[in-house]
Amino acid sequence: MVLPLIAPFSLGALVATATLRIPPLGAEHPEHAQSIFLEVVGSATPDWTLAIQGRVHPDGVFTNVTYSQIWDITAAALANATLTVNDTTRRFYILPIVAPFMQVVCTRTTGTLTILGSYSSQSFSQWLLTTARGGIFAEGPAAQDAEITGNPLSLGVLANAAAPTDTSSTNSKIARLWGTRKGAAHVSLVDNAGNITGDLARDSTDNQGQVATDDTSRILSRNSLMNGATQWDRERNNHELTVFSSAARTSTANSADITNYNGRSVKFVLDVGTVTGTSPTLDVKIQGKDTLSGTYQDITGAAFTQKTSSTSTDDLTIALGITIVANRSISNVVPRIFRAVATIAGTSPSFTFSLSANVIN
Image 1 (tube, one colour):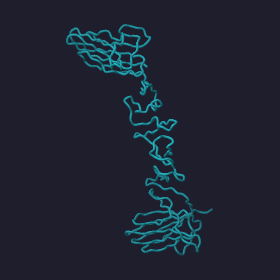
Image 2: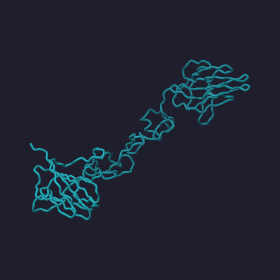
Image 3: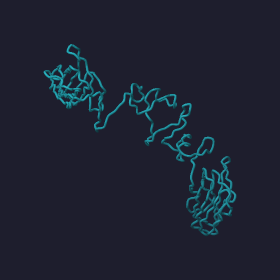
Image 4: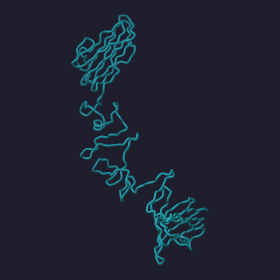
């Protein structure tokens, strides 16, 4: 069994240009040596260049060998160019393959240079670089909008102009995945012609909580119903709307227009509280709006029993096919746009009341 080898050596502190053997003169390569680690540090305002060289035969020619800086996430990949040492940073390098004959050509301009080394029986054809926090550092040769060559580790997608019509990158280049500012993946729907028809992830929404402007994504991300040539509404469950909020009113008032998105029946609840004045009366009815002309029409039978000085809570149901009970239920429909009209009469009348609408789908 061969024991792991760690054989240190020193090329000393250099103060002048020199060509140094590895290992130092008088020593030979240790048996089982597979790779070499070098520690290089300059001092006294250093300015040096180093060429790490090797040859395969005593009569051969020295040429620069492959090395790489390690323990530095900014280090370049494998290289055989001349090293430059012009500061006091302590650097570490690995030579993954040991040539039979090796040397370092050190050229000095100023300062002192120290080179320490160690042989290892481990073979390093590839190695890991680590970040300052101890994590593994990985990178590929292709950056954003750069040509894909070789076998890069791609964390993006291949840009293809035959797919979506977005041309921010050209064919066969890296294109990063899109995401929203909230961290959601940005996915686009594409038709057979390669045109983007809708986005499934967007930051902006309309007042109904829908994804803004993209009809196709509305259909697929939630149930939607068409309300015209190009407009969609979310499919709704049973829900309650405020027609008149609770307040004291002294004169006739119309509620705001209310949209019935996809309700088939509506139960209105009128809650009358404090009533003052002489012979006060309150009549509440429901009207539908003709959106073409902008006029309002009474929904036949959709009216509460007239209220006077007494307080009460009453309901009125509008639905097709139900039993008709005067001022309580009618067989009818509520159009898309409707409102309530509260008519108040008497001498100095005041009614505190609210009106809600429970839409049943």
